Amino acid sequence: MRTVPKIIFWLGLGVGSLLLILIVVIYRNHLWRTRNDSRYAAEGQAAVEEYLRTNAPSALKQLHETKDWGAFVKLEGGGIAHPVWNIQGYHFLDLRRTAYFTAGKLPIRIIISEGRVTAPGLKTVGKPYVRDGMIFVSHPQVRPGHVPTFRRTYRIHRTPRLRLVCMPRTMGAGSVIRSVRRL
Image (tube, rainbow, N blue to C red; front, side, top):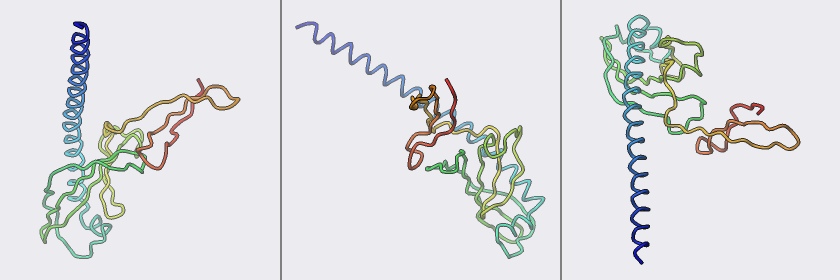
């Protein structure tokens, strides 16, 4: 009779320890991600500010703004949004900012995309460009830290073993095969 409470105690202690370790790992990942994403957003926003300082009339024309807003003054705003459904195939940060010009203010959406996919070989923050009413910037260090990927090995009928690198079903309608390699 005495062994049952001991087993329950040690089992509870083990499960509690695992939960504590899991919470610490998740929290450290959250802190790391928040710090890095804030830095990437600041670097991307600085590139957009410089772009608007030098190219404000042409950029606003591409944003379908017909009014003459004058010279660019500053960008204001805070917060970083992450993609909920990532159907583009790359990770990005979404910044909603207000651009102040000498003749008024205008809401602007800035997308800081994963540079290794959108601009391979990029070593620094890329040059901003306007598309679909948004300003895009490629950043070489933006990564999908919270999007899990997994590897499964499938046996394909009458062929050598191949490794298919798949994305999980939570990313869209089904798993997406990213690459195939022989084992």
